[in-house]
Every structure is written in C-alpha cells, then in structure tokens.
Image 1 (tube, rainbow, N blue to C red):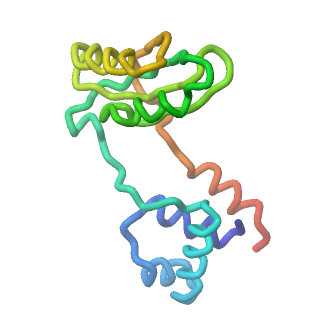
Image 2: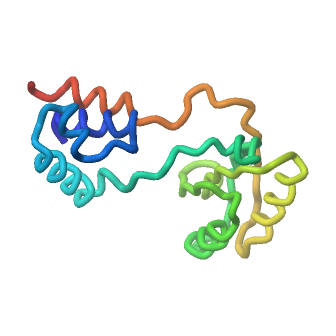
Amino acid sequence: MDELDARLLLLLTDEPRLGVLECSRRLGVARGTVQARLDRLVERGVLTGFPPALDLGAMGYGLTAFAVVEIAQGRRAEVCEGLAAISEVCEVHATTGQGDLFVRMVARSNADLQRVVDEVVDVPHVRRLSTSIALSTPVPPRVRPLLERVKGRSPR
C-alpha cells in the first residue's frame, strides 16, 4: 500500500458515498487509476466493502455489552455459528487468555440484554459467560490513524 492508496482510503473513510470520478478529481489522478487502485485493494482483501456507518443507539439499541465466553474444547466453529444466529451479536473474536471468544452485543435495555445473554448461554457448547456493559465509547472503531501513518511514510 502506498501514499495514493492511503489518500484514496482516507477520502472514502471520510466520505464513503463518493464515486470514482469525484475521487479522481479530488486526488488529481485519472479515473482509471482510481478504479484500478480500488480493484487492487479489493483483490488484496484490504478493502472489504462500503457498509454504511450506523448509530445503533438511534436504531433503538442504546446498550452495548462485551462478553468473554468460555466454550467446550474443539467446538469454536459450532459456537460461532450459533452466535451468528443471534441478531444482537455484532462481532465475535477468537482470543487467547481468559475465555475463548470475545463478543460485542447490543440491546435495547438491561432487560433486553438479559434476554440476549440468555440466548448466548443457550448456544450449545457455551460453558460460561462474563459480561460487561459499555458506559461510553471514548475511542470509537477507527482506521484513520493507520492510514495517516501509511500516507506519511510513503515516498512522495
């Protein structure tokens, strides 16, 4: 990834609805260059999609919780399949250390979180669950600092 790739991704991070032509105009390169760069970034797995940024609180899911999940040995695929079937489970990470999986989930209220936790506990091969409620998100998910680093490191 070079400086132009980083500049292109920064532009799309800030304004994901921009078209290829507008990106080329803002970056001062040909439309074909932008399209080729995007295609290459997709092919390499760097750019995986253009999902909209959603405010889950505005959608009625104002509570975010994280769970450390301990599972039966050798059953990760089955447990992950069961977790993926729960709409409120937003992401699952296989981890080292305490527990086997780290799960981010959302709920509408504390009572709704109890329902979601009960669904997680009912997934076959889940052995134990430890949940924490997020009070705030001082650093939201981000990629900008990494892109800025790549942009600054590349030759001009």
